[in-house]
Amino acid sequence: MAQKLLDLFKQRLNKRAFFKRSQTEADLNSSLVEAGQRDRRTEEQRETWTSRWEYYLSCLGYAIGLGNVWRFPYLAYSLGGGAFVIAYFAVLILVGIPLVLLELAIGQYTGLGPAVVFQKLCPLFGGLGVAIVVNQFLICTYYSMVVAWTLFYLFASFRGDVPWSHCGPALSSSSLCFSDQDFQACNRLGGVYNQLCFTGEFAQQTGISVIPPSLRVSSAEDYLNQYVLKLSPSISEPGSPDWRLTLCLALSWLICFLCLIKGIKSSGKVVWFTTIFPLICLLIFAFRGATLENALMGVRYFIVPDWNQLASLTVWVQAAAQVFFNLSVGGGGLITYASYSKFSHNFYFDAVTLSLLSGLSSLLAGFAVFSTIGFMAGHLGLPVSRVVREGPGLVFAIFPDAITRMPVPVSDRDQARVLDFVW
Image (cartoon, rainbow, N blue to C red; front, top):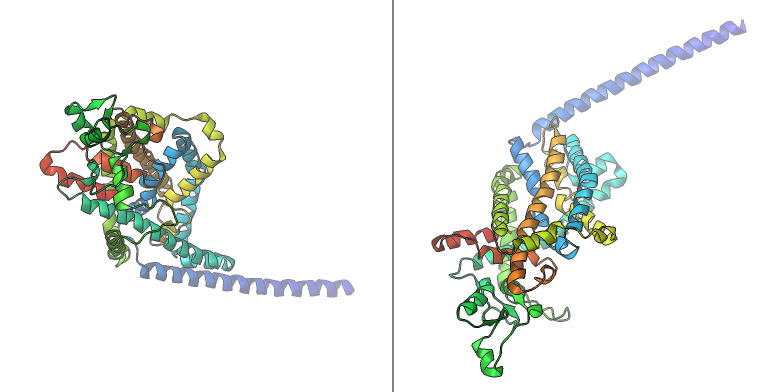
């Protein structure tokens, strides 16, 4: 009797559990259906890219930018050339590609921007989205200053003769400025001995005029430091803001506003020019640099590694930082772009090709810069490692000099100088 009561009790428990489980499954299925319908309504209402190429070029322009052309060459120049390049590509493949894949997946799956997506994924990480937005604002503040420099060079390039092609008292206060064009003119006049130019002014004072090779500063670098930036001797003398750079800075912010005023509808159209045209100009610089005298000297410094440098922790840390800087992973931009993509879009191809193209563009920029450095090293009589100062201003001391050597007709010179604006 007791056994029968026990069996009956078990049957009732099983039936109750069955009905409860069935109700739970029904509620879950209903919730999933409602969520799916809500997601479809959201996808229909949310703005998406007009075409796949606008999305791809936007991501490509985000992954290929000033970091590739401006930051990569000076890091390679200061960290041993080839050793840094090897470390960079190793980190790019092992770390960069997976992170790009992760960010594209998060943005495309959720359809949300970085400011809110982390709160949805895990409420504990809600502050991460806010930190990303603040970080991007801080990055924009100094990136816009670099753009202001390029605008300054753009306006200066429309003059009758580009001011950085020669040394002049109106533009430079440095007595160590050495212009290659002035050197060639001095050579034609027969005033050169052992690659040193004897000027009339110094000859009248001392009977001999030389700028030792170890102290020479190129006219392009001198123009950047003395005229554009107006560098002070020390941090204790900050100086006052320059009105020309201030106007260029305001113009750079205005350009950003106009490009983004209508969201992806306006930015998607702009990227056809801002992504493709700079790459074409970079190819022109690279091919022109390859034809310059002593270009191989600079390229060899760039691609031949110092194997001892690979054992340096600094090289690997800077290579990893450059990968993050180039691809802008952790910045939220890739998540934002992917959030406007269709849910079923294949992002695997995008992640791999974007990362590799970013690395190849850095390599191309390195060839363009170091071939010109090799040329300058030969004419200045300096080793490659001492041609220009290490630092962010490296590209602004190299590319302007390269533009003055473009083999274009004089009537088209002003059109060729506009290329300087790209960098």
